[in-house]
Length: 110
Length: 62
Image 1 (cartoon, rainbow over the protein chains, first blue to last red):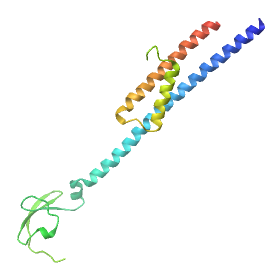
Image 2: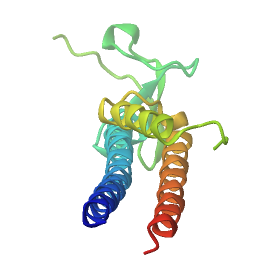
Image 3: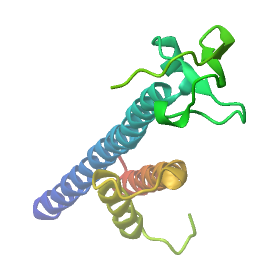
């Protein structure tokens, strides 16, 4: 009887030990999944903020705000080089707060 | 979870999802669904442990 009882006790202890270990494992898995799931979201958010900052820098409006002006010819095409313009030609100059019409008086030699 | 899934199958699948998360292998569009699946697997396993514990307690007359 004593031996049987001893064996019964051992089986009971081992079984509950295994169950408790599995419970502990599951708790750990739960926490790990929560933690791991947040990492790609955090990374994606940081990437998005970086892209947004880059986009803002490339926005023509932002470039005008830094003090630059956009020059357009009579066809409303952006003038990229002084060589494109002739003396006496009308141009539109766009600033951050509006535009003006101007006439080319003189082309400076570089 | 289907009745045919075993506890071990669920743990295996859970490990696989955790590995994918660790290796950053899950596309953003699938992230929520995978985490939801992991949560469902954990819930299934926790319930399985609970019922097993109850059965054993009954067996041993605890």
